[in-house]
Amino acid sequence: MSLKIYNPATEELIKEIPVDNSETLAHKYESLKKGVQEFKKTSVRDRILIMSKFADLLRKNKDHLARVLSDEMGKPYKEALGEVKGAAEKIQFFLQESEAYLQKKKVNHDGGTEEFISYEPLGIVANISAWNYPYLVGVNIFVPALISGNGVFYKPSEYSTLTGIEIEKLLFEAGFPPEIFKLAIGGPEVGEILLSMPLDGYFFTGSYKTGQYIATKVASKLVPVGLELGGKDPLYVTNRVSSIKNVAASAVSGAFYNNGQSCCSVERIYVHEDVYDEFLDNFLKEVSKLKVGQPFDDGITQGAISRKEHLAYLENQIEDALSKGAKLEAGGKTITGPGFFFEPTVLTDVNHQMKVMKDETFGPIIGIQKVSNDAEALSLMNDTDYGLTASVFTSDKARAENLMAELDAGTCYLNCCDRVSGYTPWAGRKNSGLGATLSFHGLYVFTKTKAWHFRQNMQ
Image (cartoon, rainbow, N blue to C red; front, side, top):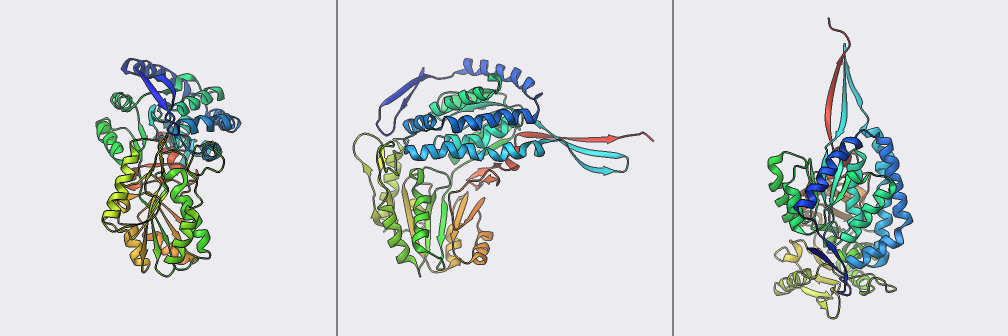
């Protein structure tokens, strides 16, 4: 059985790759079991040195890696290049800080007894990754997992398998033993096999529905589960901003970068009535500059939608909104011809009775709603089953801090959006996930603690 990989921008077949099955995955698991026993004996410093070489290889091979990513995912080449370079930069936190955080720590000296904490690897973990940012979401998991001494069963999405193969090649070239990183190639059926295997942790990036299924399926194992799920991320423009034009440009980027195919894309915008008309005018001007086309064409800002079946979902959200009174300001339909392309779409006169303001869109559609004050904006921003990110734009920092303190989201932004840093935890609330990646929180999740009590003399 083989996995057929198509270019979503041309619909052409790129490659066919053999998929894994129960037998091949069992063989890889046995290899990981042996490899992990040796690998955990290596020092954290040595693992960091190898991972540093991996980061260097990402930079060295960025052009080739970006081309492969564009071909199989459909994103503009410039964005693909930015993703590869961004992944190399995000790794820096773990390269700089892991040794200090993972070392054995003396935490107390109680009379004649010294107390320590040490951090040991979990064992073999599954990294079931996503297609929309395979490098940026992948390094959140396999980088700290490997530095912590774990073996990794890495399942790339069936929509970004070629990128998964490139990641494996570079890890091995950097110096990681083949016995501690194994690919699991295939679709949901391969993921299902991983869930049945005796692994020591499961870390998934994807939809809420699949994340909930994984958590339920492996619950009886009592192993760590990390879920990086979806979002319905709001942005609020107050009536005190230094430049409406700049705010509009930032909002357009947050909503339409990567075609909106991101868990932290801006998916709904609330604008204070005092600046609503000016903001909308500038926002639409910025949207008109977006250019849809083939990923390698000059000046392209919007590539293809990665999954053909998602086009009908996007159309349904628009139809639902229009039937309930929304106004179509721009775009609104699938672009005919080869490839899976969708027009950047702006809807106004929206409300929370519409799917576009409640259900995750994961595409180039944005709803803009007028509000009369901060209290209304805050109520609407929190009116969601998700809780990943939220943005506030204002020149009044104290006002922003008051709003951000009340926002039920794992990450809050002032005068920016759609940003991820290796130094801060990436954690969703409610249906946006379970646990955290990045920062020292995202390092310790791949370890199990051991308490040490040393008493020098028996009295």
